[in-house]
Image (cartoon, rainbow, N blue to C red; front, top):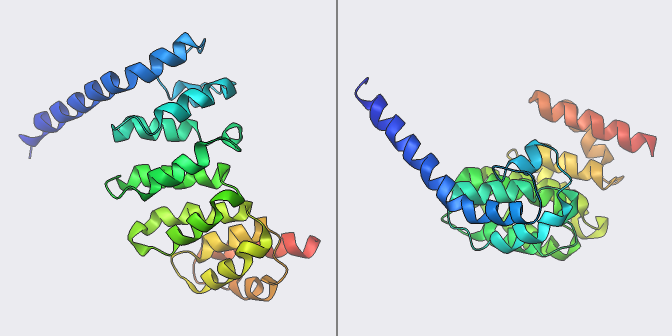
Length: 210
């Protein structure tokens, strides 16, 4: 077992070095635009006001092939500043790519839960129904909470019977203030999973407040 450690460390260092090379053109452009960063992740880790960097990140998102670097760009686009731009549509396209690893796809879903709107509604409904995307669908369900209630409410209520997605459907139903879902949410306050029970209780409390 000890013989594997140097090889694993060597592989890790190779990956770090490759990521640094592949990220450099993006970072150089961000620095040229006036951002005080060393890494792409500094944009959000340093809590910078980087709304003017969004067009740069959008341009690089489909160009970058390195999935680690692409994930950093995706995380940097997971902000309200990216709403109403090309970012949501590009993120949907990236989510569809079957060769993406699960961590990257989950990050894309998380970004869409922040920036997606009604323009992406049909695409997101379609993606959620494809079980091949596994747990990455979770954040897409939450993204539906940003949509017009009439377009997503029946779909979300059906997901309350899906044990993989029920908790995320509850969150989205709370966001759209679904009065129709209230009787179902009240029952889910007794769900066997603690976090699902807690989300159901929060949703019921929110809906009863009006």
